[in-house]
Image 1 (cartoon, one colour):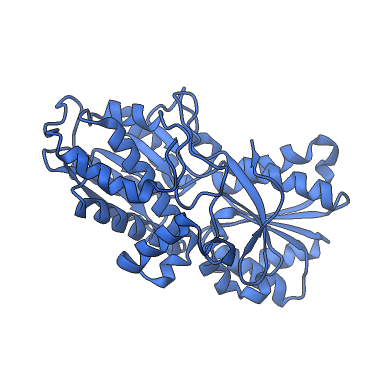
Image 2 (image 1 turned 90 degrees about the vertical axis):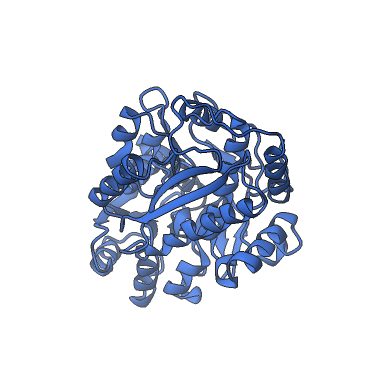
Length: 402
């Protein structure tokens, strides 16, 4: 098992590889790899409605930079080419084609968004380009039988929604549930998971479903509609700015439902946009440590993250859960490349990505590890419920799995 010391060990391990004389990658099916470099491609929304997630790419670039300072992986430096797609699927297609066909990247890493990744999935699989550790929990990206070159990373959205449903049934069995969801595969996955978790006998608990488009300026009218439905539970399946907009609007119009929030929007940075006082009591699920919670102050993994942000980033990124996600994903990618040894063909990169065993990263909650196999393309399958205190996320209950 790889322990929380992984962050500190990875640099030393990379240096050790560089002394073993491994230089020439297997030529067959190894684009983007030279004697000195591994090119990695990425699209993220550095502009547009989900630009807050751009911090993920900055954290990953900083992590790879740290590894490069220590000699790289297998004697090669990691060259992350991260470009803006503004969360626009047509732009994602354009940028990915450029990365693959002109930049000649070895693989794609942490491309963000359900719609954006769907737009490039067939292209990647037709061309046998690894599409690794996607920043979307849509269930369609864990389908190795039909799309063997595409692998997710974060927990399945349907899993989280089923966990929410079970909690609602246990704590508020007569609830009237309103759902705010993004009108794409991401949001619709929450509806599927919620209804599956409630079961057919409780389907009537969902009294209103209201969608929004990522191009919408606000969700004010949707929140007003949900309030008017008489809902006393609000499920917010929204990413980026839309989550804090929903929290703030509900509070400002005097609506006080029990609120369940998509884990990807549970960063303190986003909650500050809503107002920390207005976010108090929100429920989410978590798979990572809330570094703002004093309970983790002396945790070795959090201390490693702080040392990293002190040197390579800033206190703002230290407190941002999205930056922490990028930190963990980059560490996971380094582990995959280490396992590849001298065979950096696309085939072997994909093979090793599907061969992670009990990988424990610095910022994962205790008891949560990363596991993959040729039939398991969902690296993180465990979650724990948490509620926002007004300052930090407080965990409750047990670690739950799908």
